[in-house]
Image 1 (cartoon, rainbow, N blue to C red):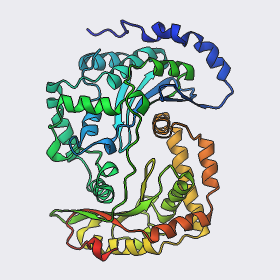
Image 2: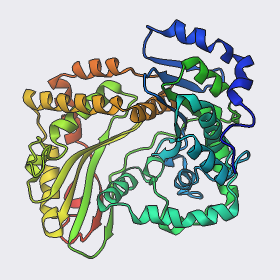
Image 3: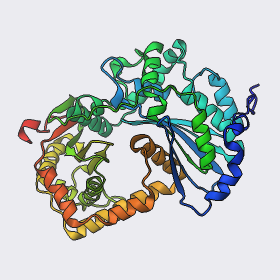
Image 4: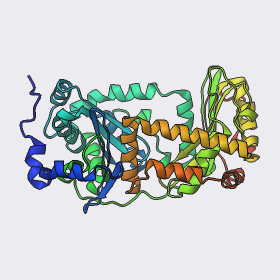
Length: 441
């Protein structure tokens, strides 16, 4: 039977390296800001937030999302995400699963186009065990060939479950950026099962390094978290960033049978490196409409009400550290989607927002951010994303103040930029009525 306790008590062993003053440090920081951030000499960023909850959450985040893939290893980030919890240098799959189950903990891995995040959630009295196996899963991958072979079924199942609307948005990114941010977060079907142990080891060695990593925690003392980050055995590696992807006006169409279609249309938009413009974009998204807010309700956004009620529609804003896309997604009957796309493009070209629209947009962004940061799980994820991508943390009060400072003229200026931009299109389904890009631009 696997033991529930660590044979090498990591936190106690590391006390000589700075954990001994944990209690004093915790007492000293009471009354200070809830969120703390430290940049280590090895370029790793550590962020934490105080919490009175009984469960602590700690994440190790790498800038190793799908935008870092090349033509030779497309889908590697998906395989890496699915392989979380497999055998490592210090623990077997059974050992990780059994030990975490015995202390009521959970280990999850999530990834997007820019990052992959390993998170452990564990009661504070069992934090030592949780951190031990978080470190094993996030820093000691070995990718045994027979385990990767068994993983193929899971990867294929993930691909098969992708909704049509999500597939349209993935196709939109491919059309807009081609590579980099154009790489899907899902492994291409033709590459499922093709990633060798050597391919995965090379991908991890290149992207999961100290200079490209961050550690974030909620409900964990900051000084303890800094000590944990310093104890991680990560390669130094290069901290070089992915090149900024240029926007392309093109389209990708996946023609299929049936009576439904989903289409995503967007133009180039700012990323988080332009914070004020990015926040204006979020306000514009909610002002443009993100779908009904009540069951069987109407689309009353500045853009979605122009698309009409015959299809499901929503404004789309995908923002990244240095880039973004703004547009809309429509899905519904194949006979109706074509007219909806034409109406959506016309609305995007003439998008105009009033003071009332901006007020409604601000309220929507306020609600989204407040709800997102209220949950300790999503708060830990947000801290890790900011720490890994920005090297600093925007506190909730700072973000809300920045949103409050967004004016109607700022949102209208963002809308005017979008109106003159070239378009990219991703479409999936029965596309008999969907116009081609050449007739939309």
